[in-house]
Length: 200
Image (cartoon, rainbow, N blue to C red; front, side, top):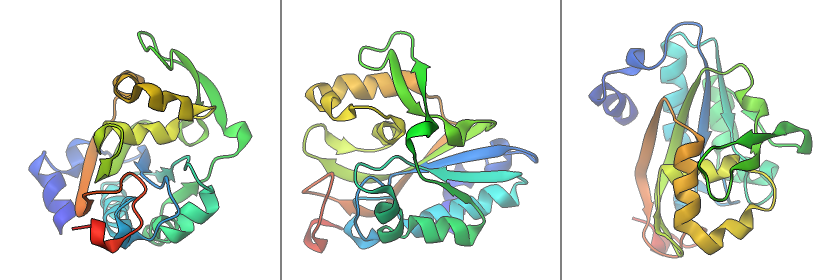
């Protein structure tokens, strides 16, 4: 009901998703953490969003991320894999052949950089689902920082200019809309978390 109310507040799902659309939903599944720890997107929010998009008539919903830790373990431990499948989405885990060089004019760090392309092939809508959490380098990680999980290559080098890469990410992708997931907020020890004491 909260997800539906949030989307209704910006015009309703039919404003964004129409019958026949192929929709990529990008949660944050960066770390092998259980959902209550707040380091990843809430699987209940993801499941509700997938169901809403399917209800709007989407032909296909794809859930994708390129986690920092083991993709299989991150998707399983966070609950995102099971939530996506239960709601009727297809889960895309990255493999080396799934990346293509993306050209981002005007970007400082990723003007030409490997991008997790396979789930986007044939898609025409993109929705982000990002948790609100503390980040030790940029203060807070929210919607735009979530697109970091679509990059391949040696992306750890970007942390030397965290604000620069976030600006580049804003140039890289223009989403259909984003959901800022505040069901559990990681107030400290971000972005990885690890203690329930850090979550409200």
